[in-house]
Image (tube, rainbow, N blue to C red; front, side, top):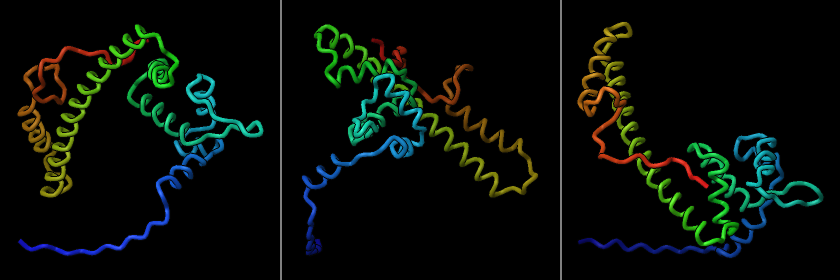
Length: 192
């Protein structure tokens, strides 16, 4: 076995504390903050009006910091995944310490567990759909590389159908589904 001897001389002038202090001092106005997420300032004000964002104020001007940025990333991710504002608020109520009643925390925890199970099922579905669509792209690439522009499109369709038939479960209602375990439907949203 050959051993590789490597000497590395690294001089780092920035400490972790310096980086964290600089990050904590970052501040953005509403226009810059909105641009960071490709939304309008009106959108930011909407979430502020709903109580999901609480920017600081300096001289009457909204000032957003790293905590606001992280929070808005979570809001946007939740919205992309189909969660309602109330769903998102119920999570923030726990993480912000708004809900402290033990029974209510337990009830929400149970709901969150159901959401996590639903998200896992959605992830499996996305993985299957991703694989199916990748296969369609490969079939299309093959057809495009081996046939002239006007050749038999029906041949491409037949190859796709054969590949599709090989992965379906036999249920005519299934759409782009591979073999999946018997899983009881889980709620996909958080109830409060």
